[in-house]
Image 1 (cartoon, helix red, strand yellow):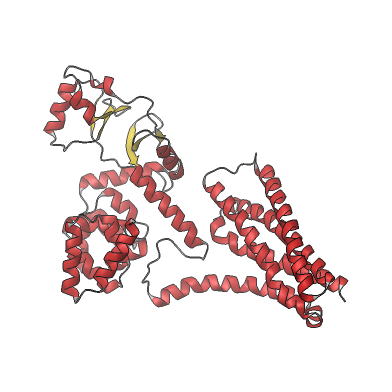
Image 2: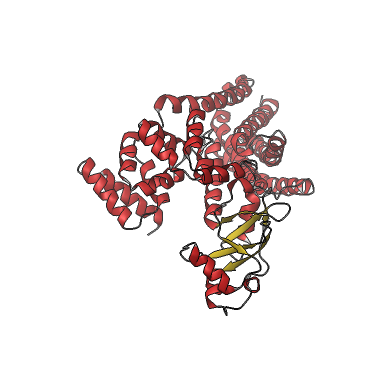
Length: 449
């Protein structure tokens, strides 16, 4: 059984609890059985706001911050807005720098200012260091709470320092100079097994993957994919150790990117709450419905230009959805391929023409094959070879057009600094509808009347 199936059962169990007290007790049992903060966040997101806040309050205090951080932005805000003034101050005072970085974009400015006033001096210093980098640079998100040791000491001295700071078996230790220049990573297990007189620098990992703090989040995720260790050190231009990112960060980032693109296709945000206020959600979605209405009107106007031919040949009205659907599907395939490739930085000025030729070739082959099939079926269905020829031509034109614009639209949107996943599908659907209807009805008006 998958993790998500387990969560579904746990949500169902909580939803069917006899009363609020029983529900809280069941959640407490889940926590005792080792349910992690990420899973708890997903569970709480599945409940209306009042129930969500009550269940969050019932969690152990030490889990409050981490559960909120794991929540989507709108869900987190819904909990924070429900807190009393005392609860809010206590929560903000316990924030660490990474959580505040995660929260700040979704919180009102006054709450962020209050958090900066209440968090500890050490966390504030780390937060300020993170803000030396842009939001899309990995240095902004790197974990700076690393255990470091001087590069030139022995294993004996290293063990003494680890014992002095009461660390509980750190998995990896970062070697630096007095000026914090990065010199390598050592596994704690290797230190325990080494001779006590061995210089610690001899234990460092070879061929370690590093990432520059100014590089993008996608670069960091890619670096982790090729790393032998479950973490990647992040360094500045002069090799100063900034922090590190691990595989959990990579998975979280990939998930957020996937959800962002999935939701963007319908004009929504990955941080949207399942139980967001009705009026606010209506406004957000209404804008997207308005945009789609405009594109639908454009397609309808195209159809209206050929009202006479449609009224005389009823078969055209029956077959029009086929033309639009075939173009839409073909275009969506190309668009999806392009959006994924652009997200992975695989589309460049050097391969755009070759990529377009390839997609046009695919479109031409599929267009001809399906045009013959659909044209033959339509001709037999309506006992009219001319209808078969007409729809065949429209299918070929529309599928090739879909392939062409499936490549061009995301490239153009990217140049305009717009997200291809957000607007690409709407524009492409409009293009394929208009071109398909025009080709189909225009050809029919020429050859059938």
